[in-house]
Length: 134
Image 1 (spheres, one colour):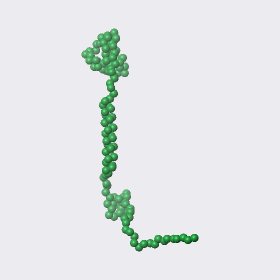
Image 2 (image 1 turned 90 degrees about the vertical axis):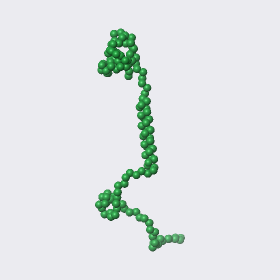
Image 3 (image 1 turned 180 degrees about the vertical axis):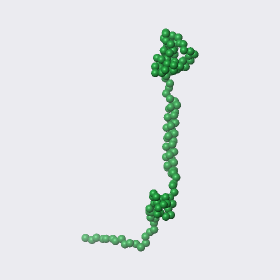
Image 4 (image 1 turned 60 degrees about the vertical axis):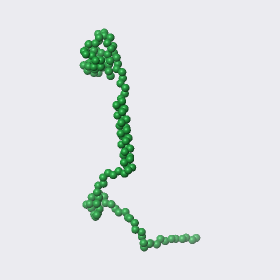
């Protein structure tokens, strides 16, 4: 059996190339350490072209989403038709308003019904039709 062995012989000529250097961090980076001639400055925020495009796309998405939400809120839902009540004999405006809005104070309910129906006073007649806004 035969074996061939190749020995690498050191060469006198080594190509020059850049070597990595240790960069100081922490206290040394500020200039208080052993690093001589190293000046470290705070770099501001720098965006690449790709970063600007991504940021622009995100901003456009936020504006579109906000605009859509605003349009839906502005359009709202169609107002429901107000309920209509016919005044029975012996009923007063207070009775009608209190029945329509039991959780509201009577004075507020009467005012709401009177404004909705353009009433000048607190008198209603039997058979009169009153709108009850929601």
